[in-house]
Image (cartoon, rainbow, N blue to C red):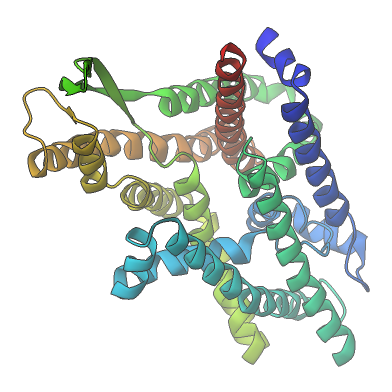
Amino acid sequence: MNRFLQIFKIKELRNKVFIVAGLLVAYRVFAAIPIPGIDAARLQNYFNTNQFFGFLNFFSGGGLSNLSIVMLGVGPYITSTIIMQLLTIIFPKFKEMYYEEGAAGQAKFNRYSRMLAVPLGLAQGYGFLTLLIAQGVIARPDPFSMIRNVIVIACGSIIALWLGELITEQKIGNGISLIIFAGIVSKLPSGIGAAFATYTPGLLTAYLALLAAGALLIAGVVYLNEGERKIPVAYARRVRGNKMYGGSQSYLPLKVNQAGMIPLIFAISVLLFPQFIAQIVTIFSSSLGVKVNDLATAFMANQFAYNIVYFLLVFVFCYFYTSITFNPEEVAKNLQRSGGFVPGIRPGENTEKFFSSVVNRITFWGAAGLGFIAIVPSLIQRFTGVATLTVSGTAILIVVAVALETMRQVDSQLTVREYEGIE
Protein backbone atom coordinates (compact mmCIF):
# COMPACT_ATOMS: atom_id res chain seq x y z
CA MET A 1 0.00 0.00 0.00
CA ASN A 2 2.84 2.39 0.85
CA ARG A 3 4.43 1.54 -2.47
CA PHE A 4 1.21 2.50 -4.24
CA LEU A 5 0.93 5.80 -2.38
CA GLN A 6 4.50 6.70 -3.38
CA ILE A 7 3.30 7.00 -6.99
CA PHE A 8 1.29 10.11 -6.06
CA LYS A 9 4.06 11.61 -3.93
CA ILE A 10 6.42 11.93 -6.93
CA LYS A 11 5.22 14.71 -9.20
CA GLU A 12 6.65 13.34 -12.46
CA LEU A 13 5.25 9.85 -11.89
CA ARG A 14 1.91 11.24 -10.69
CA ASN A 15 1.62 13.28 -13.90
CA LYS A 16 2.34 10.17 -15.98
CA VAL A 17 -0.41 8.24 -14.20
CA PHE A 18 -2.91 11.06 -14.81
CA ILE A 19 -1.87 11.30 -18.48
CA VAL A 20 -2.39 7.56 -18.97
CA ALA A 21 -5.74 7.70 -17.18
CA GLY A 22 -6.79 10.67 -19.34
CA LEU A 23 -5.82 8.87 -22.56
CA LEU A 24 -7.77 5.77 -21.51
CA VAL A 25 -10.80 7.93 -20.73
CA ALA A 26 -10.43 9.54 -24.17
CA TYR A 27 -10.46 6.10 -25.77
CA ARG A 28 -13.57 5.13 -23.82
CA VAL A 29 -15.26 8.33 -25.04
CA PHE A 30 -14.43 7.42 -28.65
CA ALA A 31 -15.74 3.89 -27.96
CA ALA A 32 -19.09 5.39 -26.93
CA ILE A 33 -19.56 7.35 -30.19
CA PRO A 34 -21.30 5.15 -32.81
CA ILE A 35 -20.93 5.65 -36.54
CA PRO A 36 -24.02 7.24 -38.17
CA GLY A 37 -27.10 5.20 -39.10
CA ILE A 38 -26.93 2.43 -36.48
CA ASP A 39 -29.92 0.71 -34.85
CA ALA A 40 -28.49 0.20 -31.36
CA ALA A 41 -31.24 -2.18 -30.15
CA ARG A 42 -30.94 -4.56 -33.11
CA LEU A 43 -27.16 -4.47 -32.94
CA GLN A 44 -27.09 -5.21 -29.19
CA ASN A 45 -29.43 -8.17 -29.63
CA TYR A 46 -27.18 -9.59 -32.36
CA PHE A 47 -24.00 -9.31 -30.27
CA ASN A 48 -25.68 -10.82 -27.21
CA THR A 49 -26.51 -13.97 -29.19
CA ASN A 50 -23.15 -14.32 -30.94
CA GLN A 51 -20.19 -15.43 -28.82
CA PHE A 52 -17.83 -15.02 -31.77
CA PHE A 53 -18.45 -11.27 -31.88
CA GLY A 54 -18.14 -11.21 -28.08
CA PHE A 55 -14.48 -12.12 -28.60
CA LEU A 56 -14.13 -9.37 -31.19
CA ASN A 57 -15.75 -6.86 -28.86
CA PHE A 58 -13.41 -7.26 -25.88
CA PHE A 59 -10.45 -7.59 -28.25
CA SER A 60 -11.34 -4.21 -29.78
CA GLY A 61 -11.33 -2.64 -26.33
CA GLY A 62 -15.12 -2.65 -26.05
CA GLY A 63 -15.67 -0.40 -29.09
CA LEU A 64 -17.43 -2.93 -31.31
CA SER A 65 -20.64 -3.53 -29.35
CA ASN A 66 -22.17 -0.26 -30.59
CA LEU A 67 -20.18 0.04 -33.86
CA SER A 68 -18.25 2.99 -32.49
CA ILE A 69 -15.72 4.98 -34.48
CA VAL A 70 -12.98 2.88 -32.83
CA MET A 71 -14.85 -0.38 -33.44
CA LEU A 72 -11.72 -2.09 -34.82
CA GLY A 73 -9.57 -0.90 -31.92
CA VAL A 74 -5.92 -1.77 -32.49
CA GLY A 75 -6.88 -4.93 -34.40
CA PRO A 76 -5.52 -3.77 -37.80
CA TYR A 77 -2.20 -2.81 -36.21
CA ILE A 78 -1.90 -6.17 -34.44
CA THR A 79 -2.65 -7.92 -37.76
CA SER A 80 -0.06 -5.80 -39.56
CA THR A 81 2.49 -6.55 -36.81
CA ILE A 82 1.96 -10.30 -37.23
CA ILE A 83 2.32 -9.94 -41.02
CA MET A 84 5.53 -7.93 -40.64
CA GLN A 85 6.97 -10.44 -38.17
CA LEU A 86 6.24 -13.25 -40.61
CA LEU A 87 7.96 -11.25 -43.37
CA THR A 88 11.18 -11.34 -41.33
CA ILE A 89 11.17 -15.10 -41.88
CA ILE A 90 10.57 -14.81 -45.63
CA PHE A 91 12.65 -11.75 -46.56
CA PRO A 92 16.22 -11.32 -45.21
CA LYS A 93 15.97 -7.54 -45.65
CA PHE A 94 13.23 -7.26 -43.03
CA LYS A 95 15.09 -9.62 -40.71
CA GLU A 96 18.23 -7.51 -41.02
CA MET A 97 16.23 -4.33 -40.39
CA TYR A 98 14.63 -5.69 -37.22
CA TYR A 99 17.51 -7.61 -35.67
CA GLU A 100 20.72 -5.99 -36.88
CA GLU A 101 20.04 -2.27 -37.38
CA GLY A 102 19.33 -1.63 -33.71
CA ALA A 103 16.82 0.96 -32.48
CA ALA A 104 16.75 2.80 -35.81
CA GLY A 105 15.90 -0.39 -37.69
CA GLN A 106 13.14 -1.33 -35.24
CA ALA A 107 11.70 2.18 -35.47
CA LYS A 108 11.58 1.85 -39.27
CA PHE A 109 10.04 -1.62 -38.92
CA ASN A 110 7.31 -0.26 -36.61
CA ARG A 111 6.68 2.61 -39.04
CA TYR A 112 6.04 0.11 -41.83
CA SER A 113 3.67 -1.79 -39.51
CA ARG A 114 1.70 1.41 -38.86
CA MET A 115 1.54 2.18 -42.58
CA LEU A 116 0.25 -1.32 -43.34
CA ALA A 117 -2.42 -0.90 -40.64
CA VAL A 118 -4.13 1.85 -42.73
CA PRO A 119 -5.17 -0.28 -45.74
CA LEU A 120 -5.97 -3.15 -43.39
CA GLY A 121 -8.25 -0.83 -41.40
CA LEU A 122 -10.03 0.30 -44.59
CA ALA A 123 -10.46 -3.29 -45.80
CA GLN A 124 -11.64 -4.59 -42.42
CA GLY A 125 -14.02 -1.68 -41.91
CA TYR A 126 -15.69 -2.11 -45.30
CA GLY A 127 -15.78 -5.88 -45.06
CA PHE A 128 -17.26 -5.89 -41.56
CA LEU A 129 -19.99 -3.40 -42.44
CA THR A 130 -20.84 -5.36 -45.60
CA LEU A 131 -20.99 -8.56 -43.56
CA LEU A 132 -23.44 -7.03 -41.08
CA ILE A 133 -25.53 -5.67 -43.95
CA ALA A 134 -25.64 -9.12 -45.60
CA GLN A 135 -26.88 -10.64 -42.32
CA GLY A 136 -29.54 -7.98 -41.92
CA VAL A 137 -28.08 -6.49 -38.74
CA ILE A 138 -27.78 -2.97 -40.17
CA ALA A 139 -29.50 -1.30 -43.11
CA ARG A 140 -27.59 -0.78 -46.34
CA PRO A 141 -26.48 2.88 -46.53
CA ASP A 142 -26.06 4.90 -49.71
CA PRO A 143 -22.59 4.80 -51.36
CA PHE A 144 -21.50 8.15 -49.89
CA SER A 145 -22.49 7.11 -46.34
CA MET A 146 -20.71 3.78 -46.81
CA ILE A 147 -17.46 5.47 -47.90
CA ARG A 148 -17.76 7.97 -45.05
CA ASN A 149 -18.26 5.23 -42.46
CA VAL A 150 -15.34 3.16 -43.75
CA ILE A 151 -13.03 6.18 -43.61
CA VAL A 152 -14.26 7.04 -40.10
CA ILE A 153 -13.66 3.45 -38.93
CA ALA A 154 -10.13 3.37 -40.41
CA CYS A 155 -9.33 6.76 -38.87
CA GLY A 156 -10.69 5.52 -35.53
CA SER A 157 -8.31 2.56 -35.67
CA ILE A 158 -5.37 4.91 -36.27
CA ILE A 159 -6.55 7.12 -33.39
CA ALA A 160 -6.64 4.04 -31.13
CA LEU A 161 -3.09 3.18 -32.21
CA TRP A 162 -1.95 6.76 -31.61
CA LEU A 163 -3.47 6.80 -28.12
CA GLY A 164 -1.78 3.47 -27.40
CA GLU A 165 1.62 4.82 -28.42
CA LEU A 166 1.14 7.95 -26.31
CA ILE A 167 0.42 5.68 -23.33
CA THR A 168 3.51 3.56 -24.05
CA GLU A 169 5.67 6.69 -24.11
CA GLN A 170 4.83 7.26 -20.42
CA LYS A 171 6.68 3.99 -19.61
CA ILE A 172 4.18 2.73 -17.08
CA GLY A 173 2.58 0.07 -19.26
CA ASN A 174 2.11 -1.05 -22.83
CA GLY A 175 -0.42 1.23 -24.48
CA ILE A 176 -2.09 -1.35 -26.73
CA SER A 177 -2.39 -3.83 -23.86
CA LEU A 178 -3.83 -1.16 -21.56
CA ILE A 179 -6.44 -0.19 -24.17
CA ILE A 180 -7.57 -3.81 -24.38
CA PHE A 181 -7.38 -3.96 -20.56
CA ALA A 182 -9.63 -0.90 -20.21
CA GLY A 183 -12.17 -2.35 -22.63
CA ILE A 184 -12.30 -5.65 -20.74
CA VAL A 185 -12.59 -3.99 -17.33
CA SER A 186 -15.43 -1.78 -18.59
CA LYS A 187 -17.36 -4.91 -19.62
CA LEU A 188 -16.66 -7.03 -16.55
CA PRO A 189 -19.51 -5.58 -14.41
CA SER A 190 -22.09 -6.32 -17.13
CA GLY A 191 -20.57 -9.79 -17.65
CA ILE A 192 -20.82 -10.59 -13.94
CA GLY A 193 -24.33 -9.20 -13.91
CA ALA A 194 -25.29 -11.43 -16.85
CA ALA A 195 -23.87 -14.46 -15.04
CA PHE A 196 -25.99 -13.72 -11.94
CA ALA A 197 -29.05 -12.90 -14.07
CA THR A 198 -28.92 -16.38 -15.59
CA TYR A 199 -28.28 -18.04 -12.22
CA THR A 200 -30.47 -20.97 -11.27
CA PRO A 201 -30.31 -22.81 -7.91
CA GLY A 202 -29.50 -26.08 -9.67
CA LEU A 203 -26.24 -24.58 -10.99
CA LEU A 204 -24.87 -23.61 -7.57
CA THR A 205 -22.07 -26.19 -7.87
CA ALA A 206 -21.23 -24.86 -11.34
CA TYR A 207 -20.94 -21.29 -10.07
CA LEU A 208 -18.76 -22.37 -7.15
CA ALA A 209 -16.55 -24.22 -9.62
CA LEU A 210 -16.44 -21.06 -11.71
CA LEU A 211 -15.24 -18.97 -8.76
CA ALA A 212 -12.65 -21.56 -7.79
CA ALA A 213 -11.44 -21.77 -11.37
CA GLY A 214 -11.16 -17.99 -11.56
CA ALA A 215 -9.01 -17.91 -8.41
CA LEU A 216 -6.80 -20.71 -9.73
CA LEU A 217 -6.48 -18.96 -13.10
CA ILE A 218 -5.31 -15.76 -11.47
CA ALA A 219 -2.83 -17.68 -9.30
CA GLY A 220 -1.60 -19.58 -12.36
CA VAL A 221 -1.06 -16.43 -14.41
CA VAL A 222 0.82 -14.76 -11.54
CA TYR A 223 2.97 -17.85 -10.96
CA LEU A 224 3.74 -18.19 -14.68
CA ASN A 225 4.59 -14.51 -15.15
CA GLU A 226 6.80 -14.32 -12.07
CA GLY A 227 8.65 -17.62 -12.62
CA GLU A 228 12.26 -17.32 -13.74
CA ARG A 229 15.47 -19.31 -14.07
CA LYS A 230 18.46 -17.57 -12.51
CA ILE A 231 21.69 -18.14 -14.44
CA PRO A 232 24.79 -17.49 -12.26
CA VAL A 233 27.21 -14.98 -13.80
CA ALA A 234 30.74 -14.25 -12.58
CA TYR A 235 32.90 -11.27 -13.54
CA ALA A 236 36.65 -11.57 -13.96
CA ARG A 237 38.89 -9.18 -12.06
CA ARG A 238 40.38 -6.36 -14.12
CA VAL A 239 43.07 -3.86 -13.16
CA ARG A 240 42.67 -0.29 -14.37
CA GLY A 241 45.38 2.04 -13.15
CA ASN A 242 45.78 1.49 -9.44
CA LYS A 243 42.29 0.07 -8.93
CA MET A 244 40.91 -3.43 -9.34
CA TYR A 245 37.44 -3.95 -10.77
CA GLY A 246 35.23 -7.03 -11.04
CA GLY A 247 35.57 -10.26 -9.21
CA SER A 248 31.89 -10.15 -8.25
CA GLN A 249 29.10 -12.64 -8.84
CA SER A 250 25.57 -12.03 -9.98
CA TYR A 251 22.87 -13.81 -11.91
CA LEU A 252 20.95 -13.34 -15.15
CA PRO A 253 17.18 -13.93 -14.71
CA LEU A 254 15.50 -15.73 -17.62
CA LYS A 255 11.72 -15.62 -17.34
CA VAL A 256 9.79 -18.83 -17.88
CA ASN A 257 7.28 -16.84 -19.91
CA GLN A 258 9.45 -14.37 -21.81
CA ALA A 259 6.62 -13.33 -24.13
CA GLY A 260 4.07 -12.32 -21.48
CA MET A 261 0.50 -12.23 -22.80
CA ILE A 262 1.50 -11.32 -26.36
CA PRO A 263 1.13 -14.97 -27.55
CA LEU A 264 -2.42 -15.00 -26.18
CA ILE A 265 -3.31 -11.80 -28.06
CA PHE A 266 -1.63 -13.05 -31.25
CA ALA A 267 -3.41 -16.42 -30.96
CA ILE A 268 -6.80 -14.74 -30.64
CA SER A 269 -5.91 -12.57 -33.66
CA VAL A 270 -5.23 -15.69 -35.72
CA LEU A 271 -8.43 -17.34 -34.47
CA LEU A 272 -10.29 -14.26 -35.63
CA PHE A 273 -8.44 -14.28 -38.98
CA PRO A 274 -11.18 -16.35 -40.75
CA GLN A 275 -13.61 -13.60 -39.83
CA PHE A 276 -11.17 -11.09 -41.33
CA ILE A 277 -11.09 -13.24 -44.48
CA ALA A 278 -14.90 -13.17 -44.46
CA GLN A 279 -14.76 -9.37 -44.33
CA ILE A 280 -12.43 -9.26 -47.35
CA VAL A 281 -14.46 -11.84 -49.30
CA THR A 282 -17.65 -9.89 -48.58
CA ILE A 283 -16.19 -6.95 -50.53
CA PHE A 284 -16.46 -9.07 -53.68
CA SER A 285 -19.35 -11.41 -52.81
CA SER A 286 -21.77 -10.89 -49.94
CA SER A 287 -23.16 -14.43 -50.05
CA LEU A 288 -19.70 -16.02 -50.06
CA GLY A 289 -18.60 -13.74 -47.22
CA VAL A 290 -21.60 -14.86 -45.14
CA LYS A 291 -20.73 -18.51 -45.81
CA VAL A 292 -17.11 -17.99 -44.72
CA ASN A 293 -18.33 -16.18 -41.59
CA ASP A 294 -20.74 -19.04 -40.82
CA LEU A 295 -17.87 -21.52 -41.15
CA ALA A 296 -15.75 -19.42 -38.76
CA THR A 297 -18.65 -19.26 -36.29
CA ALA A 298 -19.16 -23.03 -36.56
CA PHE A 299 -15.46 -23.56 -35.81
CA MET A 300 -15.74 -21.37 -32.71
CA ALA A 301 -18.73 -23.45 -31.60
CA ASN A 302 -16.73 -26.70 -31.94
CA GLN A 303 -15.05 -26.62 -28.55
CA PHE A 304 -12.79 -29.63 -29.18
CA ALA A 305 -11.24 -28.27 -32.40
CA TYR A 306 -11.17 -24.73 -31.05
CA ASN A 307 -9.28 -25.70 -27.87
CA ILE A 308 -6.69 -27.75 -29.75
CA VAL A 309 -6.00 -24.96 -32.26
CA TYR A 310 -5.99 -22.32 -29.51
CA PHE A 311 -3.49 -24.28 -27.41
CA LEU A 312 -1.19 -24.91 -30.38
CA LEU A 313 -1.29 -21.26 -31.47
CA VAL A 314 -0.42 -20.01 -27.98
CA PHE A 315 2.38 -22.59 -27.76
CA VAL A 316 3.86 -21.66 -31.16
CA PHE A 317 3.60 -17.91 -30.58
CA CYS A 318 5.39 -18.26 -27.23
CA TYR A 319 8.41 -19.69 -29.04
CA PHE A 320 8.03 -17.24 -31.92
CA TYR A 321 7.87 -14.11 -29.75
CA THR A 322 10.61 -15.34 -27.39
CA SER A 323 12.93 -15.79 -30.38
CA ILE A 324 12.25 -12.15 -31.28
CA THR A 325 12.72 -10.65 -27.81
CA PHE A 326 15.63 -12.80 -26.62
CA ASN A 327 18.72 -13.20 -28.80
CA PRO A 328 21.21 -15.67 -27.20
CA GLU A 329 24.02 -14.53 -29.50
CA GLU A 330 23.63 -10.90 -28.52
CA VAL A 331 23.33 -11.73 -24.80
CA ALA A 332 26.50 -13.86 -24.96
CA LYS A 333 28.40 -11.06 -26.74
CA ASN A 334 27.29 -8.41 -24.24
CA LEU A 335 28.26 -10.66 -21.36
CA GLN A 336 31.71 -11.25 -22.84
CA ARG A 337 32.26 -7.54 -23.49
CA SER A 338 31.52 -6.73 -19.84
CA GLY A 339 33.96 -9.38 -18.65
CA GLY A 340 31.25 -11.74 -17.43
CA PHE A 341 30.92 -15.47 -17.93
CA VAL A 342 28.76 -18.37 -16.83
CA PRO A 343 30.79 -20.60 -14.46
CA GLY A 344 31.80 -23.81 -16.22
CA ILE A 345 30.89 -22.45 -19.70
CA ARG A 346 33.41 -21.00 -22.15
CA PRO A 347 32.61 -17.43 -23.25
CA GLY A 348 31.45 -16.90 -26.83
CA GLU A 349 29.82 -19.63 -28.89
CA ASN A 350 29.52 -22.12 -26.00
CA THR A 351 27.74 -19.52 -23.87
CA GLU A 352 25.39 -18.77 -26.77
CA LYS A 353 24.52 -22.49 -27.12
CA PHE A 354 24.01 -22.72 -23.37
CA PHE A 355 21.57 -19.80 -23.34
CA SER A 356 19.72 -21.22 -26.37
CA SER A 357 19.36 -24.59 -24.66
CA VAL A 358 18.13 -23.10 -21.38
CA VAL A 359 15.68 -20.72 -23.06
CA ASN A 360 14.24 -23.52 -25.23
CA ARG A 361 13.69 -25.73 -22.19
CA ILE A 362 12.04 -23.13 -19.98
CA THR A 363 10.00 -21.73 -22.89
CA PHE A 364 8.58 -25.20 -23.49
CA TRP A 365 7.13 -25.29 -19.97
CA GLY A 366 6.09 -21.63 -20.14
CA ALA A 367 4.34 -22.14 -23.49
CA ALA A 368 2.65 -25.34 -22.31
CA GLY A 369 1.52 -23.64 -19.09
CA LEU A 370 0.17 -20.56 -20.86
CA GLY A 371 -1.60 -22.70 -23.46
CA PHE A 372 -3.22 -24.82 -20.76
CA ILE A 373 -4.31 -21.76 -18.77
CA ALA A 374 -5.78 -20.30 -21.98
CA ILE A 375 -8.08 -23.27 -22.65
CA VAL A 376 -9.05 -24.04 -19.03
CA PRO A 377 -11.99 -21.54 -19.04
CA SER A 378 -13.42 -23.17 -22.15
CA LEU A 379 -13.05 -26.65 -20.65
CA ILE A 380 -14.78 -25.61 -17.43
CA GLN A 381 -17.52 -23.87 -19.41
CA ARG A 382 -18.22 -27.15 -21.17
CA PHE A 383 -18.69 -28.97 -17.85
CA THR A 384 -20.52 -26.20 -15.97
CA GLY A 385 -22.72 -24.94 -18.80
CA VAL A 386 -22.12 -21.26 -17.87
CA ALA A 387 -22.00 -19.63 -21.30
CA THR A 388 -20.29 -16.40 -20.22
CA LEU A 389 -17.22 -18.17 -18.83
CA THR A 390 -15.22 -18.61 -22.05
CA VAL A 391 -14.97 -14.91 -22.88
CA SER A 392 -14.65 -13.90 -19.23
CA GLY A 393 -11.88 -16.45 -18.65
CA THR A 394 -9.78 -15.16 -21.53
CA ALA A 395 -10.46 -11.63 -20.33
CA ILE A 396 -9.23 -12.53 -16.82
CA LEU A 397 -5.97 -13.84 -18.28
CA ILE A 398 -5.28 -10.62 -20.15
CA VAL A 399 -6.38 -8.36 -17.27
CA VAL A 400 -4.16 -10.09 -14.70
CA ALA A 401 -1.13 -10.23 -17.02
CA VAL A 402 -1.43 -6.58 -18.08
CA ALA A 403 -1.90 -5.49 -14.45
CA LEU A 404 1.25 -7.39 -13.43
CA GLU A 405 3.29 -5.91 -16.24
CA THR A 406 2.07 -2.39 -15.48
CA MET A 407 2.85 -2.82 -11.78
CA ARG A 408 6.33 -4.05 -12.68
CA GLN A 409 7.02 -0.97 -14.82
CA VAL A 410 5.68 1.38 -12.16
CA ASP A 411 7.83 -0.35 -9.54
CA SER A 412 10.92 0.06 -11.74
CA GLN A 413 10.16 3.78 -12.07
CA LEU A 414 9.89 4.07 -8.28
CA THR A 415 13.16 2.17 -7.81
CA VAL A 416 15.01 4.46 -10.23
CA ARG A 417 13.79 7.53 -8.36
CA GLU A 418 14.81 6.04 -5.02
CA TYR A 419 18.37 5.67 -6.32
CA GLU A 420 18.26 9.21 -7.69
CA GLY A 421 17.21 10.42 -4.23
CA ILE A 422 20.20 8.66 -2.67
CA GLU A 423 22.56 10.38 -5.08
